[in-house]
Amino acid sequence: MLPFLEGWNQLYFEKTETVEKGKYTVVFSRAVKGWLLSLDFASDDAYASMKLTYLGWVSVSTPHMGFTFGLTMPPSFGSFVEDYIRPSTLSTAGVYLISLITSAYPFSIKGLVRLELGLEADSTQATATVTASFLAIEIVDEKAFIRSYRRFKYGWLGWAFGVLSNIPGLKYIGIPKEIKEVVE
Image 1 (cartoon, rainbow, N blue to C red):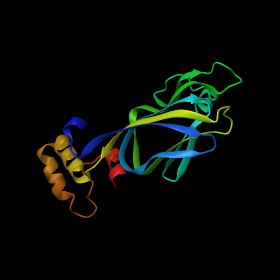
Image 2 (image 1 turned 90 degrees about the horizontal axis):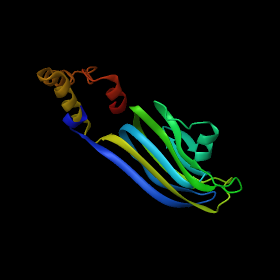
Image 3 (image 1 turned 90 degrees about the vertical axis):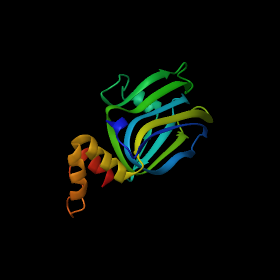
Image 4 (image 1 turned 180 degrees about the vertical axis):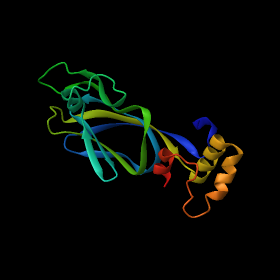
């Protein structure tokens, strides 16, 4: 139904950085309200890392970590390693691609999202090239989004729900919990 709704934009982000061992570079940091569709990470080092800070939690992921955990087949939801080509066990250089979030169901996000890229101490290289990308649906105008959702879902009753939403306690009348948890 998204093409019929107002108040949202597609948020696509892609950044390629050369990172140094032991240092993190912030590549994305801002408040986002919406749904994450995919989060991908590619590098030329098995120990290149992506640090994700969200809702006070910090997660650090590397291609080597995903490979070690056996995440080599696409799941219906979760992470998997698409490419893990390490020509020599003496070096961490190679070709690595990991999808950190893949889902048939969007992952709701609200608040500050920070992505940092780095290179862990276990690497045999001093620097690595890392690419991070994600695709999200971002709510840019909450009132227009809710109004258009009600109009799409309920027709003329959507207008009535909009009027009733001005009564205390009925602000989210006619809005499903998946939208309510993001906008409230």
